Amino acid sequence: MIARARTARWRSVLILLGVVVMSSWVVAAQPPGGGTTAPPGGGTTAPPGGGTTAPPGGAPPGGGFDFPEEEEEAPSWSDDIRAQAVDIGLVVAFSALAFTSFFKKSVTLKYVTLIASVVYIGFWKSTLLSIVNVFGLFGGNLPIFRYSLAWYLLAAITIVSTILWGRVYCGRICAFGALTQLMDRVLPAKWRFNVPRAIERRASLIKYGILGATIVYFIITGNPGIYPYVEPFWLFGLHLRTPVLLTMLASLLIATVFIRNLYCRFLCPLGAFLGVLSKLTVFRIKRWSECKTCKICEKACEWGAIRGPQIIMTECVRCDDCERLYEDTKKCPHHLIIIRKADILARRAASPTPAS
Ligand code: SF4
Ligand code: SF4
Ligand code: SF4
Image 1 (cartoon, rainbow, N blue to C red):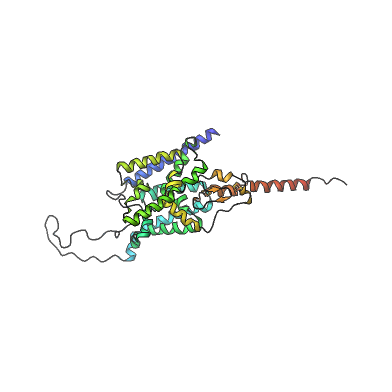
Image 2 (image 1 turned 90 degrees about the horizontal axis):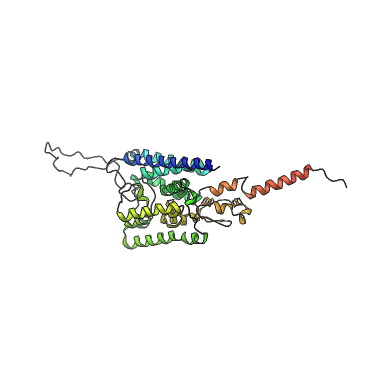
C-alpha cells in the first residue's frame, strides 16, 4: 500500500516536472519581446499584425529612393477573425477538455485539464482573467473586442459557467489554481497544516475585503497598477521582476506548500468576484438527507466549502470530490443504508416463515 502510494507520488512528481519543462520550453519559444508585458487578461489592444510602423512621409533609413507610401487597406472583420483563428480554436479545444472532465467527473481528465491549463492558459498565452478585468468593468476599459476574440470567448465561458454551475473556472481553467492543485497532488500530505475550521471560515472572508479595497482604490485613483500586489498571475509571464514582487511571490508559493490552496481560499479577489457571481448558480450540487449528519464530504472538501449539510457555493470550485462520493455506493452512507435494507429484506424473504 505504502509502496503504491510512493510510486503514485513519484509519478506525480515526474508529471509536474514535465509540466515545468514543457512550460519553460513554451516560454523560451516565444519570439523575443513577445512575452506578456500587459496585465494578465489585458487582451490585445492593437490590431493583429499592427499597422504602418514607418514615420509617415519619413525618409527611408540609409537614404535611397523615397517612393510615396501606398495607403494600406484597413483589415476587415474576416481578416481579424482569420488572424485569431488558432487562438479561438485552442480556447474552444481547451474548454471542451475542461467541461468534458467536469461532466464526466473523471479524475484523470481533471489532472490532464489542470496540466493543460498551466501550460496553455498560464505559460503560453497568459490569458488568465484578472482583477484588472473587474476594474475594466467599472472603468469601461476592457480589451478591444475585435482584436481579443479568444479572450472574450474565455470570459463569456467563465461567466456563463459560473452562473450555471458555479466556479468551474477556478476548479479547472485558471492556471494559478491549476498550479496549486498540482502542487497539492505532488507534495507529501504530511507537510500540510490543516487550518482549523473556525479560522478557515473567517480567513475566507479576507478575499472579499481585498476585492472591495482594490475596487475602491481603482475607483478613487483610476490606476490599475495595484494588480500585481494582490494577484500573482504575472508569474506566468515573469514580466514584473521587482525584488518586492519576487519576494511576495516566493513567500506565497512556499506558504502554499504547507497550506493547500492558500491564495485561492483566502486571498484571491478574482475568486471572490466569481464567488459573488456564483450566488446565482442554477445547477447546484445535490445532497442526500443523510448529509445532515454525515461528515465524509465535509472532511474530503479541500476548499472548506461544506458546512454540515450545506454547500457554500461562494467557496465551492466544483472540484467534483464530493460529487464522486455522492455517487459512491461503497463509501456514501446513503447507498450503504439502502443496500443494507435491501439485504435484510432479501434475507427475511429467503428465511422460512416459522410454523404457527
Ligand atoms: S481563486 Fe483566484 S487564483 Fe484561485 S483558481 Fe480562482 S481565480 Fe484562480
Ligand atoms: S458521503 Fe454521502 S451522505 Fe455523506 S456527506 Fe457525502 S453525499 Fe452526504
Ligand atoms: S468537494 Fe464539493 S463542495 Fe468542496 S469544492 Fe469540491 S465540489 Fe465544491
